[in-house]
Image (tube, rainbow, N blue to C red; front, top):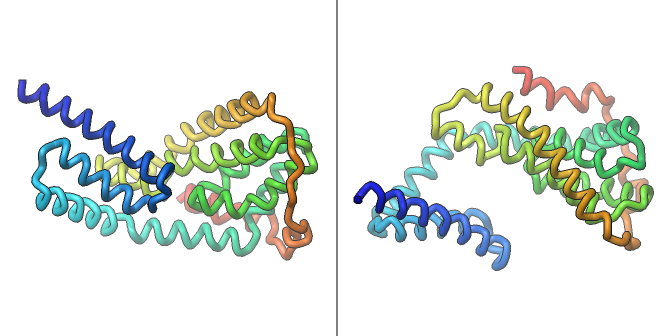
Amino acid sequence: MTDQLTFLQSAIGLIAGILFIILLTVHYRIHAFFALFAACLLVGLVLQIPLTDNIRIAKEGFGQVVGSLALLIVLGTTLGMLLAHTHSTMVIANFILSIVGARRSALAMNISGFLVGMPIFCDSGFLVLNGLNKALAMKSGTSMLVMASSLATGLYAVHCLMPPHPGIAATTETIQADFGSVLFYGLLMAIPAAFCGYLWSRYAGMKIVRQAIVTEDEGDLVKQHPTLLFALLPIVVPIGL
């Protein structure tokens, strides 16, 4: 009976914590860090953990994650910033567009989000590719909602399933799994996840009437770019290693 009660409490605490995070971040726009910390306190309350012990457990867990993953996350973020600063992301996206064609611009952004999202956090990747996304939406006549959703699902697929992104990296460390294996299988699982996101975006946007949008000057997007090889190397080499 005690084990059943503990399992029930754990399940309720987990569900309550997830819903609480969604409520705080989506509805109240609270920063994810504070939303996660508040959710820790709520889960501890459901599990009847004393407040002082609850805070101590949260601090220890946070310290372990930072101690084991801080360098990995910082270096991964730095790599992503370098890709954005050198306009390598634009080179990759334009190359994919040249292959799939303007009619499949939403698919091009989905694939671009998938590749760019490997070293770059999903929110940063979205901002980096947003200018190109708007320009392609105007050229192809595709709804901006379809384009943005396709890009976002491509980014989120790898963000949730591949290290060095913090969520999957922390999970890998917690269960003491092999990082190389998690990266490889996460990459394989992210491919159908991203493509399903594209298919859903296209299906959901079938009845959406495209509206005119104001785009950035495309001249701002055409700057000195590296070659495709050098643009891809920062992504390919870490995965190969």
